[in-house]
Length: 161
Image (cartoon, rainbow, N blue to C red; front, side, top):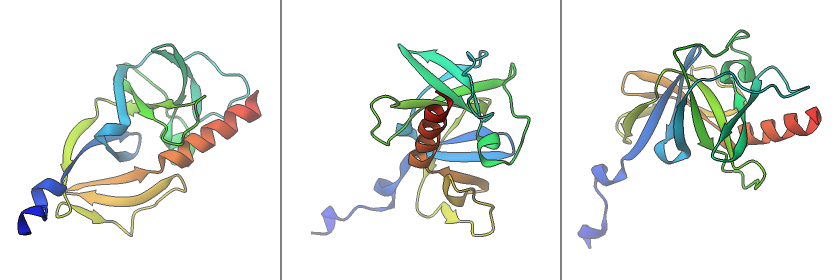
C-alpha cells in the first residue's frame, strides 16, 4: 500500500511568480494562458481606473487590469516598454468573460511550489481580492482570488455599460 502514498516531490506544483507594481503574485502555472508584450489598450468608457482598457487576444476583447490600482496599493500603475501582459483564465465560469489580462512588470517566473518551500505570511497586507499572503523560499507574494477579480471585472463592466 505504501506505493500509493505520494512523496513530497509528487505534491509539487508548477507556479508562476508575477512581478507587479509593489510586489508579486503567485499563481498556478495552469491559470496563465499566455504572456504578451504590452501595447496600449483600447479605452473602455466609464470603466474604473484599475481597468486600463481592453486588448485583443485570440478573437476576444479582454479587460486589462492593473492589480495595484485594483487593490489601492498604487495609483499610477500604467504600462511601459518593460511591461508585459499576462492572460489569465477567469475560473468563475462566466462564458462572456473566460479570460482577463493583468499588467505585469517583466516576464513572469516559473517556480516549483512545494509544501516545504511555502509558508503563510500572516503579517503581509492582504487586499480583499487576495486569498493569502505567502512566502515561497525567499519571495513574498500574494495569492490572488481569481474568482473575486473576475467578479469585480464583471461588475465594473456591467456598471460601465
